[in-house]
Length: 213
Image 1 (tube, rainbow, N blue to C red):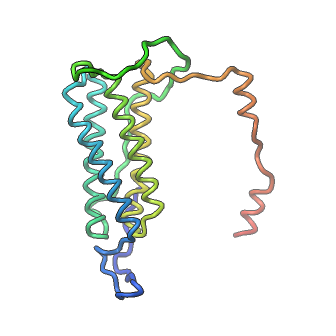
Image 2 (spheres, one colour):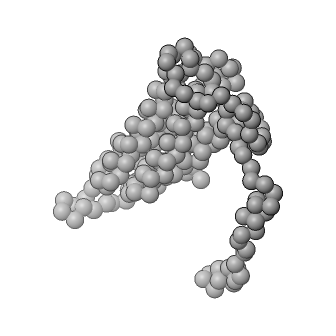
Image 3 (cartoon, rainbow, N blue to C red):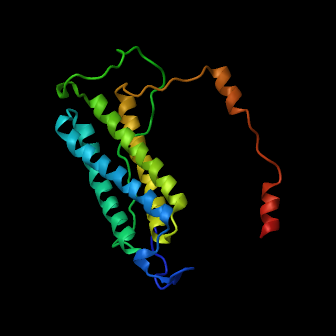
């Protein structure tokens, strides 16, 4: 959707204190949740800055730089509308991953993972995994916050940014899969077919929609 604009002349009421100014148009639950969102986003941005010097693969470095620039802009408009309660200076943009989206299925033997003993042991596999984890954490936090946000602009900014987190995570997962860092097992054909056929379409949905209209 990516449209953050709402009627800013709307009056909000507090039962005890009367009219609520736009910059105070936030519920208590919302304040805590958006605070957590912004803290999570800052951590993700800091992580990208810390890890950038350790990246060896140019493709991964390009992904990190694109995602950092996009997330930084999105962070700024989220802070802006959260502090003012009104439209940010520009709407939420849409992040578009680069490259294909084909996964390689199957497992190959790899060395067991274990904690590193030195920063010199940091690899592109670890870095891409950390970035993937940060994108997934951001998507989770923003979804939870959007469900509790009362300010319509902040809610829409959060809701519009969730697909961007998903797109970033997907881009990183594909990168990891291509390098066999993120392996995707498959069920055998019989079991897969059984699960694919476990549900059937319901009858009467179209007729019900027509009755409601």
